[in-house]
Length: 412
View 1 (tube, rainbow, N blue to C red):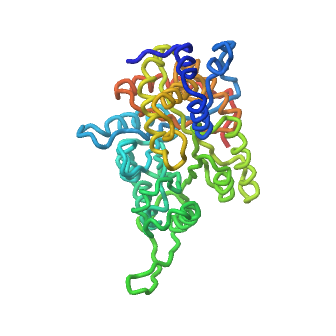
View 2: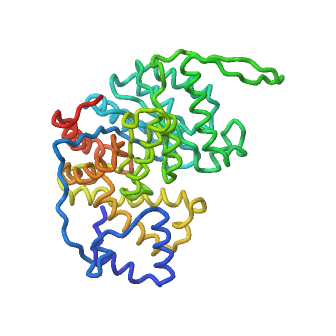
View 3: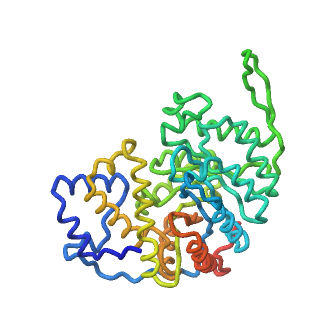
């Protein structure tokens, strides 16, 4: 376990960078919406202590579990035990949902190439929790296959299937797309078109498909699902346009604090609510879910010691994936990358992740309540040992229970 670098150590690391390297670092941090923690940005290297916010009696928040990490290249025969154990815990403790992603061709997230397969496994080991894809990259699949597979999940689970639709971001993934890599440039439009088609099939309508001889046939998918309409989120990152288009069709939103300042996230949620209203949908009815790295324990410093190394490794892997696509991190030298990761970790630990005791973590929950978030999707598999993750779930359940109090507003 690595020790936390002191503020003085981090300031010395930053000061050792040349002006050019410091400028490159700051540009990369701006590109990822990362800023220096207050005590590093302050001229004295320290900032005035701010008491943590505590839960207000009227605050309400739903909690779900989110999975994204995991090295699919290992030979371990217990690869999915943590997912299965956590799903059963979420089911027993009243969490809203379990999210499993879609990832291809990389170790990072490599346990999750097909969320419908894993959701089907979870369907027969759980009873209440909603089973969600976080996300299905719709341009990589024929809508018929999406409707069929998730209708199976819906039947196995007794009507608990849901998806978040994503447009995709890595060009390599589009070797899987029905139309081939040429579909990459218009992937966002293709995603929204596919959402409409999947919902039509889900409702029992037919769609026209082209046979090999060029003739057209109308097809209707089976099995018939239990839910009359598939619950759909749209995965939205930096673009306010995606928030608005999701609102216009009445979908929910899946987003994250990565790449956002909270005030900017609040502005996008406001735009989403306005777009729902303009599209004829109840502006208050849509669910805004945000993914947050999560591990809770009995002591803030103990948690810091446990999470620092795996979270820095996780963030470094995440940023390296984007070099050459979004730029910034890949252009830095080793010292600047290390400084950026140290600063990113400090910012995450202080105010952008649920890391620490339940008391400490109430502050971020309150901030997310203020900007309009309805549900926190807790990413728990970012590199900690499985037994440690399991232990932390009990403290997370404590935090969740605080936000289910009858003192808050009731659900519609």
